[in-house]
Amino acid sequence: MEQSAYLVIDDLTKVYERGQVVALKDVSFSVTKGEFLVIIGLSGSGKSTLLRCINRLIEPTAGTIRLDGVELTKLSASRMREVRRGIGMIFQHFNLVSRSTVLTNVLTGRLGYTSTWRSMAGWFSKEDYHLAMQNLERVGLKEKAYVRADELSGGQQQRVGIARALMQQPNLLLVDEPVSALDPATSSSIMQYFEEINRQDGVTVLTSLHFLSLARRYGSRILALKDGEIVFEGRPNEIDNVRFKEIYGEESEEVEVR
Image 1 (cartoon, rainbow, N blue to C red):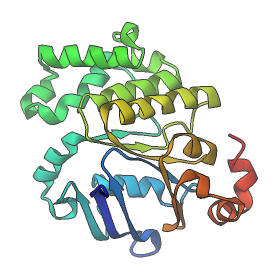
Image 2 (cartoon, one colour):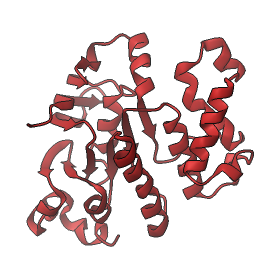
Image 3 (tube, rainbow, N blue to C red):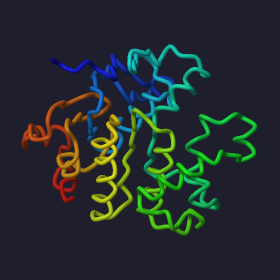
């Protein structure tokens, strides 16, 4: 029996700067629950815009987004904030508060579950602190809990971002270019965390990547964007040399180094 779609994107379009820049054009695809979808393409292809439209950090210009039967594009701002509790987000540049401790950064992942006045005061429950330490241990950073975030390496900071996202106990994880600033060895170790979260926790993962080699290693399915449009959708082993050139063009040799 075919598994029903968990995330459904229909004719998603995003236009910036008074119609001068079309970042996404009529993008349509679906994702089943528990899938690991990798979105590839060159810089400026629309990968980051797509991920941010899904959780409405960026408002789409047109089209619909349905998550587990709920049409996100029709939700009020307050209702959307509730839905975001179950959508974790990992950012390319970590988005940590550099002068705060690792533990404090991780605890911010619970803000969606905390009252406004408590979050402003930085008050979290004992259960939240316990969960934060558990998640730090999971990413190998428990001993760094009281270290300032800006004292960590890039790979460590990204692991803090993963622990923070896990605090939401998400059903969906959106991961935007998580290894673009990291060396190859660190990149693989970071991707392994997402693979573990996907397989062990059953979390649906959508991640954008620049490098096809990583997409082939970790993705169960690949979606390729070029100039805001889908140019490939299928299994990693279905990307042959012809498809590769369609996606990456003249930069293909540079892209495939990793």
